[in-house]
Image 1 (cartoon, rainbow, N blue to C red):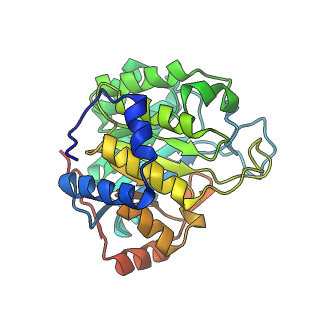
Image 2 (image 1 turned 90 degrees about the horizontal axis):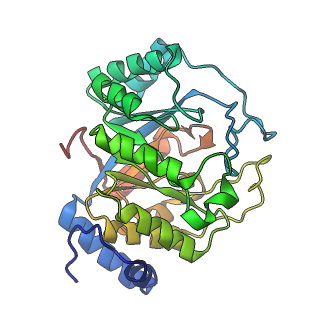
Length: 322
């Protein structure tokens, strides 16, 4: 079945794809993947928490929310030199995109934001794609980040609009969509996906994919996260997400957003090599490297180098899509 780039998917079409027999779904997604991408190439990204904990939001999955009792230690914004050193180490270990995350509800126009702009400039000067995830952004703040050299901005939808209020009450779904609009209008690449395993239904997963695939432009990057439950958060007792659920999400995202980088994100620490290979077969072509995703455990660099060697994968160069 020939499928081009569309922004007018219906929920029923997405549901039909999602519910395709799984081996046929993987095959179909693999064909789409090869039409738009080099199937042996994977974008390697590193995500660093530059300001940890103390967040006023109540995201039910997040150990950085100030209201939950987790073992996260609150830290101020890291020194610029420390961040740039981390970026240089990430580049040396094979990462081509460096993402900086701060546990803020929204960006404020203050000295901390000025320092983040310095960090963006510094990482950009290294020849890496630089990404940030800092919470909600105004259009002016997005422009400042763009002028500093920001390549991409991550702001996940997390789940469907209907399920959203079960997970977060301190901001609205429209707040998230407004930030994506501000990022897109500043001509910054949009990175936006979600998390499965939050107690959502399959309909919620399909609704989230529907929202992403019907944005004015598909996100350049779509992270698919499996919840890693953290003691002290409201979702600490959630069951592990099945690899087949991850495969269905990745394959469906690949088919309906064929040009996007579909990122196998949080949850890899709980997957073996064979399970990760299934996700790559289903169309994933981006991962986060390094032993932490902000505060969530992740496979270490040596494990990922072994994974790439076993599967004959190669890192995608920076700025390839430009």
